[in-house]
Amino acid sequence: MLRVNPTESSILDQLRVQGILLESPCNGKGVCGKCKVRILRGNAGPLTETERSFLTMEEIEQGIRLACMAVPVEPVDLDPLELLKTEHTQVLGSSAMPAVSLQPAVTAQPVPKDREWSGNSLAETILPPEKQPALTLLRSLASLPADTEVEVVSYLGRPVDLIRRTPLWGMAVDLGTTTVSVSLVDLRTGQEVCEDGFVNPQKAFGLDVLSRIQYTLEHSTGIADLQRTIAEALQSCAERLSHQAGGSVRDIFEVSVAGNATMIHLLLGVHPASLSQTPFRTVFRDAVTVPAAQVGLHLHPEAVLYCLPAVSAYIGGDIVAGALAERLDEREDTVFFVDIGTNGEMILCRDHKLVSCSCAAGPALEGMNIGCGMRAAQGAILSGCQCLLDELKLRLEEIDHVLVAGQFGRHLSPESLVGAGLLPPAFASKISYVGNSSRAGATMCLLSQAERQRAQRMARAISYVDLSTKSGYESSFLSCMSFDLRAD
Image (tube, rainbow, N blue to C red; front, side):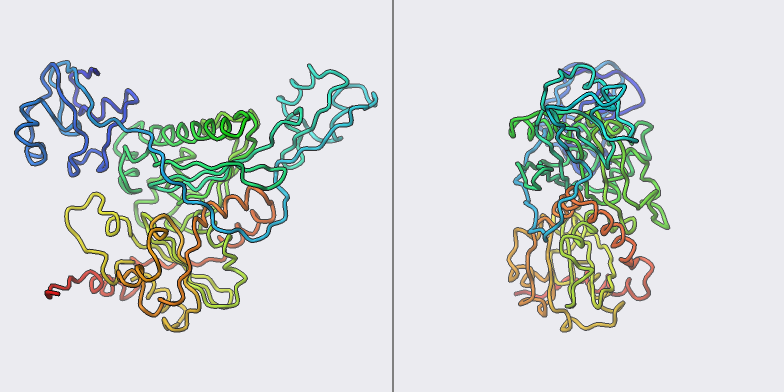
C-alpha cells in the first residue's frame, strides 16, 4: 500500500518523485490507459472523461483510476496495479566482428615477484616512471606484501590499480530505446565471457525518445529521473554478469556504449531538449569518455565510460557502431545498411561515400502509442531509402547488398521483409541479416583504440540527409501512407 497527498500533481507524478515507477507508455498523456491504480482509502478527485473512456464500469466500482489523471484532494492510500518490472529479454547477440588488433585502453602488466628496491618509494620501485598513479593504486600499494605477485593495471598508460591476477573485464552495451543488450568481455583475450539483455526501464517515462524528452521538459527532475533509471539498470546488469562469471563489479574497468543520440544524452545526464526542436541538434556528437562513477556506475573505482560518436541528432553512435562492424567505409560494392528498431536508420554507401537518414519506424511496426495508422504496407520504412538513392543518383537495381540489423529485423526472413512491403522487391535476393551490429561495434571499440579512432573518422565522413527539409519528401511520405482499400 502506498500513500500520496493532496497537491496539484497527479498520482503518477507523486509516485515518480518517490521513485515508484508505473507502466506509463504514453508518459502520462492519458492516451494509453496503462497506469491503473486501485484507490483503497481517500478521495482521488473527480473521475475524468479520459478515465471513463478507458475504464470499465466494473473497474470504476472497484476504485480503479488512471494515475496520470487522478489528482488527490485528500491523503490517498492506493495499490499500484502495474509497477514497472525489470524485464529481461532474449539477447540479440552481436554480429560477426571483423578481425581487430587487441589493443584495449585497459592493460595489465606483471610486476616481477623478485623485484629489488630501486628507488626512494614503493611507487618508484614498481611503477613506470613519469606516470601519475591513481589514488586507488597508491592505497593498494600501501598494503602490498613485498613477495606478492601482482599486476599493474593501466588506462591509456596511466597506472590505476594493483591486482593479484584477478579478471580484467569490460562491458559492451547496445543502449536501445526499447531494449538494452550487454556483453561482458575479457580484456586480456578479447573473448566474450557472458551476455545479458533487458527492456529499457525508461519506458516508464514514455516508449519513444520524444516522450522521454518531453518528460525532461515538463519536470524539473526529469533529466535526473531518466539518467538514474538507466544507470541503476546498467549497474544491476553489471552485478548479474560479474556474479555469473565468478568475479565482482570491481573487476570491470571500462564500459563502451553505443546508442542513439537521445539515449546517450540521457545516460550522461545532458539535457536533450535541442534534439526535439528545430534545427534538431545534439549538444555533442564526438565520442565522450568520463569516469563511470560520475554517471552512477559503481564498478572499479577508476572505471571509465566511453560513448561512441554520433553523426547527427537522429543518426547516433549505434549506427556508427554498425557501420564500423560492417566496414562500410572500405567496401567496394554498393551497400544499403538499415537498422530496423524503434526508428529506421539507414546508410547507403558507394565508392566510399556514405549518406544516411532516419525514419520513424516504431509506431508503424510495434503499434505503440497509436490508435490508428498504416499497416506494414509498402513504404512503411515510411520512403527514406528512395531519398538516399536520389542523393547518390542511383537506381534500386544498382544496389549489390542489403544489410539488415536490429531487434525487429531478426524476426523476419528476407522473404517476409519483402513480402510485407518493408523493403522493395528488387532487394529480395540481396538481403543479409547481420545481427546486433551496434553491440559488435561497441565491443570493437572496447578492444581496440584504433577502432575508436576509426569510429570517430566514420562519424565525420557519414553525411546526413534531413528528410524533413528535403524537397519532395513530403509528397513521397504521403504517397507511402496511402491505404489500399480494395478487397482481396
